[in-house]
Length: 178
Image 1 (cartoon, rainbow, N blue to C red):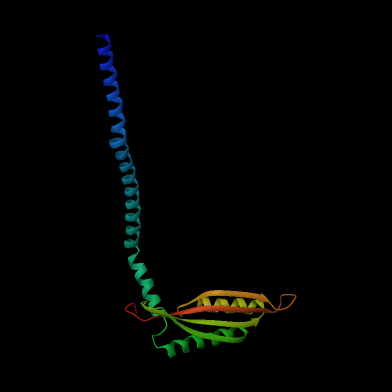
Image 2 (image 1 turned 60 degrees about the vertical axis):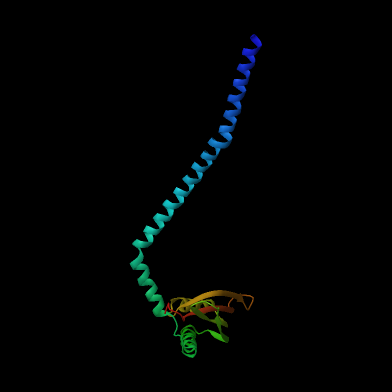
C-alpha cells in the first residue's frame, strides 16, 4: 500500500513536470517571443510615425525646394541643354584663367527613368587658385549640375602647375516631374 501512494505521488509529480515543460515549450516561450516581436514592431512603427510627422511638417519647404530644383534643371531639348552647359563652362574658364585641354560632353539616358543627364569630362591645367576657383564656379552655378569626380595632380616638382580631371553631370527632367 505504501508503494502505491508513493508511485501515485511520483506519477503526479512527473505529470506536473511534463506539463510544466510542455507549457513552457508550447505556450510561454512562443508568447514571450511574440511579445518581443510586437515590442520591436511598435518601436519601428513609432519611429516611422515620427519620420512621417516630420515630413508632413516640412512638406511646404520641401515642395518649394523641389520646385526650385525643377526650375534649374536643364531644358529638355538636347542641343539647348548642351549649349547652356558649354556656355556656362566658357564663363567659368574665363573667370578662372584655366587652360582647358579637352571637354567631352556625353548624354546618358536610363530606360524607364523620368530624367536623363549630360555628363561632361574636362581636362585642364593651371595653378591651385585657378583650379579651386573653377570648382567653386561649377558648384555655385544655378544650373542643375553635380560634381561626380575630381582628380588633381601635380605637373611639376614644386606643385605650382596642377592638372585637373573633372567629371560633372547635368540633370534634364523629361517625364511628368518637369
